Amino acid sequence: MRDDGRDHGRDVPGDRAAQLAGAMAHWPRLARAAGLSPEGWRAEIVTRRDEPARRRIVLSLIRDDGTGDALVLKHMTRPADPALVAAEIAAQRRAREATGGQAPLILAEDAGAGLILMEQVPGRTVEHWLDDARSPAAMRAILTRAARWLSDFHAGTSNGLRPYNPAKVCEHLARQRQAVAEGRRRVRAPDRFVALSLRVEAEAAHWQGRPALSAARHGDMNLRNILMDEDRAWGIDFAGPQTAPAGHDVARLMLAYALAYVPAGAAPAGRLLPAAEEAAFFTGYRAADAADGAIGFLMLNQLVADWARLGQAGAPPGLWRDQRMEALMRLAGRVFPDLW
Ligand SMILES: Nc1ncnc2c1ncn2[C@@H]1O[C@H](COP(=O)(O)OP(=O)(O)O)[C@@H](O)[C@H]1O
Ligand SMILES: [Mg+2]
Image 1: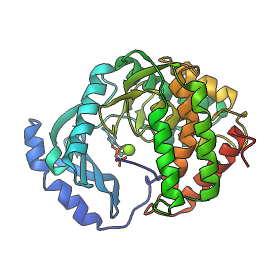
Image 2: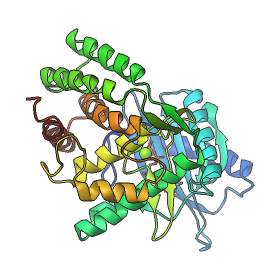
Image 3: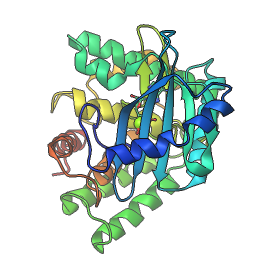
């Protein structure tokens, strides 16, 4: 599921009790499918969303007997699309196999009803780790570990190097600009958005044909979809098992970090991250490097992608989103100093 906003630690609109009951109604059946007794577990809401376009709840189920056994039940009811849930399940299984267990084990599922029951891993999100970090060096060490998870995932699912072809992304950019021009798609500061999109597209020729790693795509590589404990990491919330240039996930993770944790104006022209942060990233990310055609181009494209996502109609407004948008505009102006 797309996860555009920070939602931990606060409640969201909607009927909490009804959503909890809706998920728990399936629990006895799923528990039995996993070979467990449904009795003697305590349910807690980890996070939920209840919006017109997106409704899902993530529950933690903890066994009462003190064994420490804990499960996660994820119930996705909007969009009600069994294919999306099946894709998430298939991708998570594939990731687990490809990385020697760096994704939670799925114990039972019902894609038709939007349900996944899995082990609860003893990790906190990368975002939590970063929020608690006490120094820039500690933050870079966390970035290195997050990048290492992504590297293991891409290396484990690698399809090798392909000449990068930016045509599809460029077509998407053109269609998106058209939609903005015709008012079918709302973005913040549309004139600047269009200028940025054209500027990014102009870079495509430079990266065209350069070798690019092709691998499974996580599809929603934000700082809340990697969990870590002191020495292990797990990926969650996969969008699907499709293969794509690895640069998509790399760019998304880099920009998520840049917007939330890098002071405005710290990155040199042409880069999303300051040199020390980029080095920390590639210390962990070994599957490819900054010369990869897709990473080089999609890093730039991600500025447009996040701009469109942060400004999309129906997204909940709020200070968090406004701050990210401001950081994004400032960063875009640093990456392309000639732009505005
Ligand atoms: N298997 C798991 N073990 C531990 N925590 C989990 C697990 N799955 C999800 N979580 C927690 O729930 C949050 C939301 O789960 P996620 O699958 O990312 O759903 P969403 O679609 O809401 O982003 C995660 O950021 C994480 O904190
Ligand atoms: Mg998520």
